[in-house]
Length: 88
Image 1 (cartoon, rainbow, N blue to C red):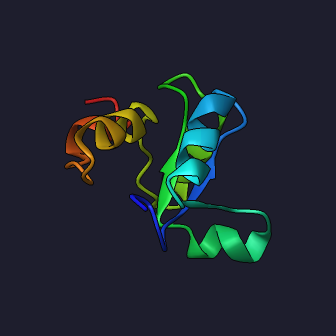
Image 2: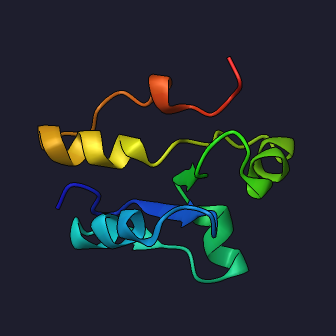
C-alpha cells in the first residue's frame, strides 16, 4: 500500500517493470487526459526522454523511476529531490 491514493504518469520510455511495481504497491496510472491533470508524479526514463522537455514546459516536476525502487526497498516514501530530472 506504499503508493495508495497516488497517481503517476509514465513516459512510454520508462521500462514497463516500473509501472508494474507502481501498480503492485497500489499506485494508480493515468489513462485519460483528465487523469493527467490529477497525477501526483510524472516519470521519465532519463534526461534524453522525449517527454521530459514537454512536461517541464508545462511547469511539472519530473522524476526518475528509480525513486520507486528506493521507496519499495525502504518501505517508505523517500525524499524525491535527488530523483528530479532537471539537468542539475
